[in-house]
Image 1: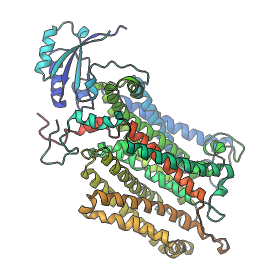
Image 2: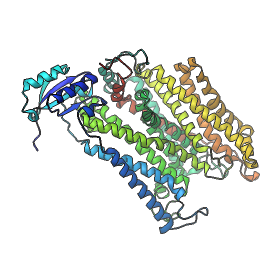
Image 3: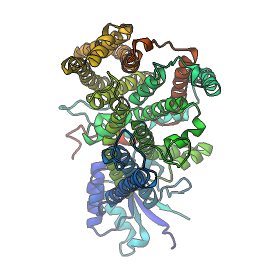
Image 4: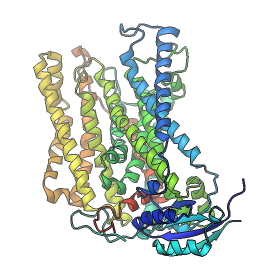
Length: 176
Length: 454
């Protein structure tokens, strides 16, 4: 797939102005490619219309996997493979299996979820991100609008909408 | 950019803008190391090096290098282990429990506290590993690998094995939690840097671009990690306390141990966070981020947990008397009046009496007093573990076996080694990593204000 190359950027310096701006821009029929922020802006995902993340489900499934693996492992080792009498306890001493099962649940849930997060968000040490504006990791919110996706709207019109919505700057950015 | 509210005290003072936050934190990463830093770092590395001699001697000669005897088979090693694990409780508590309780003041201190947690847990893990005597065979005793050194498998009925799982899970989950929080800040450093630094921090930031979708997932991950880490923090010291509580030694065989150990861990962890943060804020001039307000709030946590610990000490004593079990009664009377009375009363003074001074507002908002008391608390918490472990063991069932514990140079050296390790790691962290979570501080910069919502 060929990457889109020509963008127009709205630069915002306030999170509340940004939230209203996203609503206005989307309301006027312009499709927003993505918004880049230096910190999480609460409510931004709602105005951008993103669906809730499914990561909690991944965490739950990995957690269940951890519990089942831990219980199976302990039961197999202690009761079936090599049963030994320890302190007169039952071979399958379930109360004693609770701590390890709990820890393995947490371990697999955390690592599984974080793994899914890194993969879905394409985070890896050798990743080369497209930086629209370096200030987006410092103090500015950058709204990127893909021109290829908005061919029906006139370029000047987009600039006008961005300016009206409270952008402090409107810039163009092209990638090779 | 910062709008101050008339109702709430701002979390960050000095009218900082977003760019100021970036600059105030990043400049320490970007500047050349100062003389002060070199001196501190070299001191830490020297202590680390000196301590290594004790480690090598212990590995070469065996555990006989330590002052342990037939009666007192656990002493400084396990004391230090529990002490370090306890210190390692504040970081994840601050970032996980306070996140769930929406305590936004945590944002200025969570990064350094979590780093401290990770280094403290590494130090703690040193002790059981060395105590194995032959740690290169340790994997067979600690991990479920079939072997013929004892039983075929490890014993899942043993609290010592639960500890292996608890500590390693705690370490790895804390590390992941810490790293996820670091990614956006590494990206900030990357975008300010050129040359080699840009490549290194670029790799560390894993291509973070701050997209709204990624932030949404990031928030979701943080919340769930906090939800997972909260019971995890509580479980770790609970399981550490099981090492003692599930035994039949008078003085150890107590059902109160889990909550009492957890409170003690938070108590000592916050004390260590204060010790380190007071120095860091001074050296790095971060007084606007770690304010007197932060210090006061942490001191309040110290009063609460210190009081819980105090009540636990008294409850233990009462229950020992009330149980009518002579051995149990003797164990406690012996703690307070026996040959280790000085350790018991050091513990009582440092942990129960001294934190009560924080009821006075002048003391809990004084930096000098807080710094001094934070060190007192850490000494007290070391004595608490020493008292529990050594005084319960040194009067054996047969009076002919009664003994005392005297540490050797190797005991001292191994303890010093962990201090060297801890501070070497902490100084490296303070130099090369952003010591304050910039992204999270930025996200609370406006929120204590009504005027923000135009």
